[in-house]
Length: 263
Image (cartoon, rainbow, N blue to C red; front, top):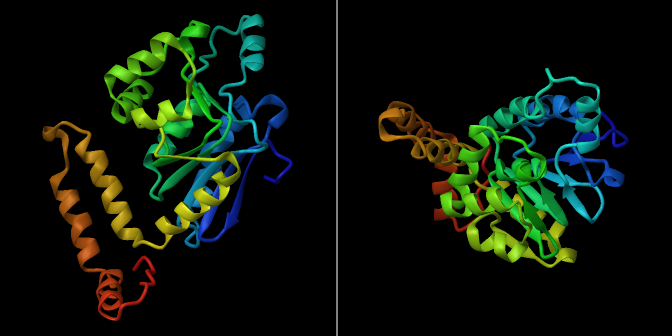
């Protein structure tokens, strides 16, 4: 994949970027892009030099307007009733949910439908003050998958999820911040710098500790009977027995910044 492709990755270690590159189409995501999504994410995830993965849209008006509606309409007009508009997204969202590296969405302009769902499935979401969000299946007559609804409820609560899905209304960045849909809001001109600074802050922390925390948070969201307490204990033990833990202790004692190596 190159920077001329509709979706591509960039590596600027320790940061990796997943880029939606259809500015003329408001970075709408078509079936070919959904198909490439998991493979490109796996490339970034498997690179030992990459510690944080950032998602962004090309241009300054749209993170992503979601699924390519023109493409969906063409399939519908062709009477292809075997095609489910939600099916191609499943593998992408599963890969994102299982990603072992922390993920950040850098959001400006519109973040709608499938674009909002991608952002929702990343660990951190940083928005420009011009960003706006909406979940729009009710405007298209679509039923939304259980996992997608579940993720929204986990992030913003049932009351806010109900509002977003039932009204399909756009909400601005400040509203999104209040309900937990985003974590930070910055002036548009400062968004990229703020996102990169946050990503470097995350990248400077101990990777094993971050993985253990993210995995344990996923366990907390399960019912107590479904939690894997043995795995949680092992994740904690892996941190305690690591070279990075020793480095963290030494750095604290020596009053210097630690240099973690994921070992």
